[in-house]
Image (cartoon, rainbow, N blue to C red; front, side):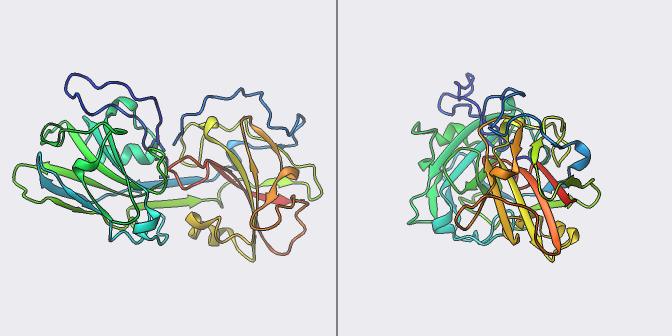
Length: 342
C-alpha cells in the first residue's frame, strides 16, 4: 500500500492566505520522498553483466484497505489534540506515545470524501492538487497533547476561525508520525470533521492496529533461481509494477534487503508480512544511491560486524529478496521474491 507524495510548497489560492499547499503526504502506509528519476543505465557499482534478472513474475502481489475513524468536532474552534492512548502503530507494533511520536500533521483534502482519501492512500493515487493544506506540530516528548492553534505551516500560524470550518468540499485528517519529515513515518491517522451541531473540542487519537488490512501473496509468484556460489548480480529495470499493482517508483528504491528465515515456510512469512525484518534469522542489506542493479556480494549483514554476504549455505528455510523504500509510508517492499539457490 502506498502512503506519500512530496513536492515544493507553493502559495494557496485566494480561498486561504495562511494555509500553504503542501503536497507532502502519503502517496504510497506504508510513497515518494521527492527524489529525481535516476538514469535507467546508472549503476550503483555492481557493474554490468547481471545474471539475475528480476521480472514481474517474480514479484509478490498484495491487497490492502485503510479504514480510519472519524471524530466530529465543533467548527472554527481551537481543539485539544491528544495521542496519549496510541499504543500501537498501523502495523500493530507497540509504541510509546510520549517518546515515539515526533510529529502531528493536519492535512486538508479538496473535493474528496473520507472514503476517497482512504482508497487513494492505499492505491497510491492521491494527486497533489487534492491536498489543499498542510500544518504540523513537532512534539516536545514531555506532553502528549497540543492545541490546534499550536500547529503551523513551518512557523506560519493559522486563523482557526477561517481555516477549520464546515465545508463540504474539505476533508481533514490528522497524521501522527515518527520522525519530522512531512509525509513520512505515519504511525496512526484519524479524520476530524467540523460540524455545526457538535460542541466537542477534544480529539483523542487511537492506536493504529486494525486500521490497515494488508494481505500478501508470495506463494503465487515465480521464485528466482540463484547460483549457490555466485555470481549474484541483480537487475530490476524490467519490472513494471510493485506488489500493489502500481507502476514502479524506481526513484524511491533505496536499498536491497536479503533475508534468511530458518525453518519458516512461505505461509509463515505471509502471515507476518509486516514483520519480515523482525522475524528473519539473518538480514543483509545494500544501500542504493540510484541505478537499477546491485551485487549481493556487496550486501552487509545487519546487527553484527557488517560482514559481507558469502553464500546460501544455511539449513532448511526460506530466502527472500526485497527492494525497499525507507522514505515510503508503505510498510511493504516494492518488490518481494523468493530465492531458490541451485
